[in-house]
Length: 156
Image (cartoon, rainbow, N blue to C red; front, side, top):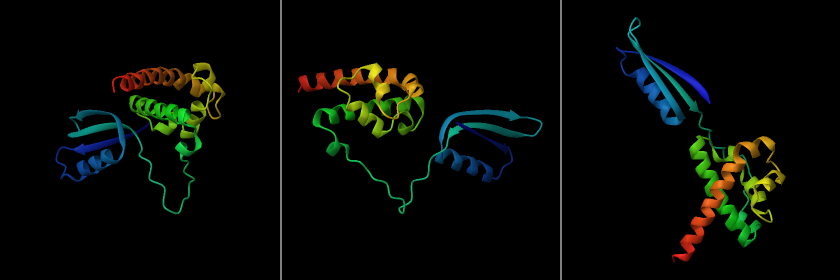
C-alpha cells in the first residue's frame, strides 16, 4: 500500500482536480481521507492505494502454461475451483491474485492426492507465512465452491 496526498485550492481552475482524478483512475484506491483547511482555503486529500502495474511489453517473452494440458481432468477441475477461490480472496483483500497464490502454486495444490489444509505447506512456493496468511481461507472457499459445484451438477 502506498500513500499520496493532494492539496486543491478552492479556487483551482480544475487542473489540480483533473490531476487527482487521473491518478485515481489508474490506481487501485483503497481509501480516501479528506479535510478542508480553512487557513489555506483548500481541500486536502490523502489517498491510500495499490499502484497498477504496467503491462509487460511485447519484447518480454513469458512461457505461458496451459494447465488444461499439464494437469489431469480431476486436477484441472480442482485447479479451476482454486482459481475462483483465489479470485474471491484477491477481491476481499484488495490484492492482485498472484500475490496470494501463483498459478504454479495452485497447480501444485491441485496435484495433491487430497485437499487437506496441512498438505498445502508441502507445495513449492507455499511457505509457512503464506500458509498461515492464506491457507485456511483458501481451504474454506474451496470446500464451499466444491459443494456449490456438486449442487449445480445434481440440479441439471
